[in-house]
Length: 180
Image 1 (cartoon, rainbow, N blue to C red):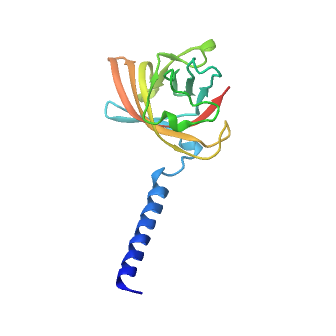
Image 2 (image 1 turned 180 degrees about the vertical axis):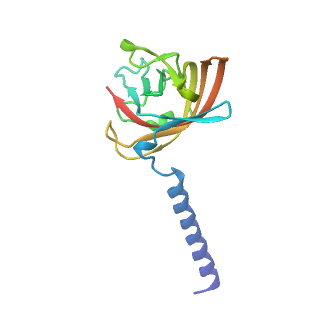
Image 3 (image 1 turned 45 degrees about the horizontal axis):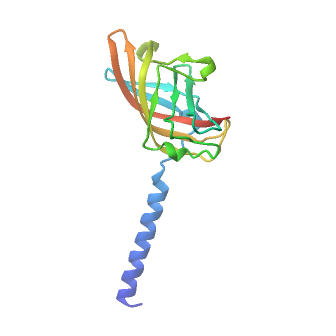
């Protein structure tokens, strides 16, 4: 083998290895169901709130927004997706990536709206007056309520505490489930 061929082969192997490592590490590790959580930073403390799922309620008529609800023992969050943003029946979760998803003061099923809240340090329930989620990654392979599809990203919340209105931020990893 000539030196030129060996050099070209080495470059091809190096490129192939780089591509493999980028793909293997690009999505991060799969999040296990017990790891669905929101981690908020508040007053120098890291508060972990286990989550169940983010239920997305689909609409047939795309002139109406889809809406979402995230519920657990330590949080209720909800809101509507922007009017031009639909996960759809095809479950195109990547459409959400990088888009600010607004959290409302009330959320969930419009027929049974709930006040949004998070439990901060000491289990104190703080009313959420607004916020934003920006999803960045998706892991898992199985759709549905028994599946493992997980959306991961950043979350920013405006909450009412005993000290007044405060902003808290952190990360979120939550099971993604569609209904409708």
